[in-house]
Length: 434
Image (cartoon, rainbow, N blue to C red):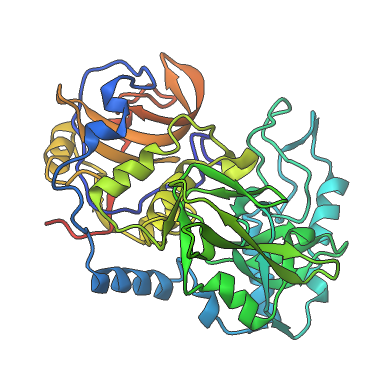
């Protein structure tokens, strides 16, 4: 597994924006003061759209063609057994190939434990053809690499970086159900950006019409708060989540929430809430100022590996910001790289990096091994600053955990004592540079 600074992989995904310069500053995190506020980075000309509608559609089409994200509504319902087995193995990310050196609690994972979980995938029971069935998440739910709730960790005292944690589903997220585990407790699902195992009680089967209400709603609201809790069940939605609904005549918001009935079928609960500014009708326009505002919404919220503990990691943080503006980035950072136009930095000297980055408009994504960051620009003193969801960094050879969304310089170090600016691998762009 990679260095636990963020989510596996990394590379890029993004819109346009400017980048950095080497500054001899200590690695103190986080930056505080005016530069750690959204207002500092807003610009009078920052509300102009960064993508025309045709450009946005072309970007979405390219990502779908490349297989980086999926259009579930247009996905064929029939799957081959061979293809599904391959997808289940791919979802395990190698953890089903050989007994991994991981800990279950304070003890090393035993062969029999590992074998039992692998058998629970039930790949030998897959028929000749599989029908993908529509379903909807009825609560926030973990998507796992293998069908077990047990956490597997790299150290006996680790409780935060579960190697089996893939991502999470928002309530109301449309999925396709492909398979069940041997014990029936887990469902193997496909989402717009992931495949993996979810608690079977966290999803509800749906007829095609009701499913489309959540998969492709004609009218919906976007969550613009770091988190939003709704309904009798206390459904937890994250920044950028989509909630079907309309505005009622009295000005309140009429929202459609998912409910699982006693038979495991999807029911729809209608709730009304006042318009308190935490929901936006449709997606927000993709502008520099909106990107900045959204990036600062989760400032100081707790880091969550793979979305654990109602949190975000570095790549889901970036993904949530962009999906709120209608740009669907892939979930993992290595896939985000493939979804972007890239400006590679490998082999460049510090001076060459500075020269290149000076030409990039503010807002690009910066990638280094194990981490992705959103560039804000240079502060009044000429120091380049980024905002990112970071787990840890090194200072004078000592690992320091910070585990939150922060504004920082690019001088925080890796294990070898190299500053982040010198470890950047590429810049990722979504919108074309002017």
